[in-house]
Image 1 (spheres, rainbow, N blue to C red):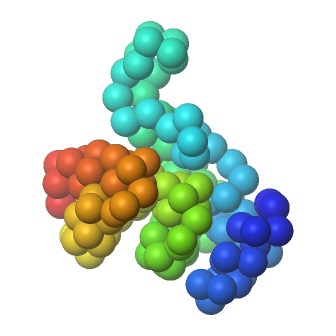
Image 2 (cartoon, rainbow, N blue to C red):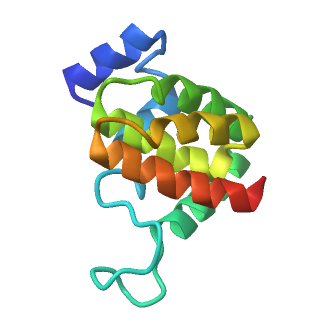
Image 3 (cartoon, rainbow, N blue to C red):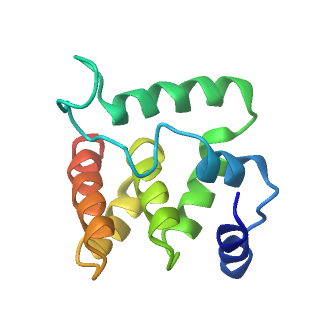
Amino acid sequence: MNRAIANEIVRLGGDPTDEIWTWLVTRGPHGSSFTWSQTRNEPPGYVGVDHLQDIVGELAVSIPAFQERALRVVNVAMNSELTELARRAIQVAAVVGGSNELQRVKQLASSQDMVVASDARACAFYLKGRC
């Protein structure tokens, strides 16, 4: 984790040494190359959000209260001014979030940061199907 992201996590009131924050920031499949649907750049049948759902399910088995902890981290990280951190939070919100996160991502859909807004719109669409 780079210093800028660690500093941002602390600024937001989080703990960059917490395993959930570390997972959010340093592991995938969420991040800059995340996919919301099938693309030509990925193997046939691969969709990043589906892969993320599988990963979250596995982590929920191995880490106590993973989904609840991830949800708390996501809600804090969506307030980040760093594009990378906000995007990762939005992406994970799609698979751990609910109606509260749907409301927040709807707000982020009008962000001045175009990639954050794009991920927020996709997440809102995804969450509407779950809520």
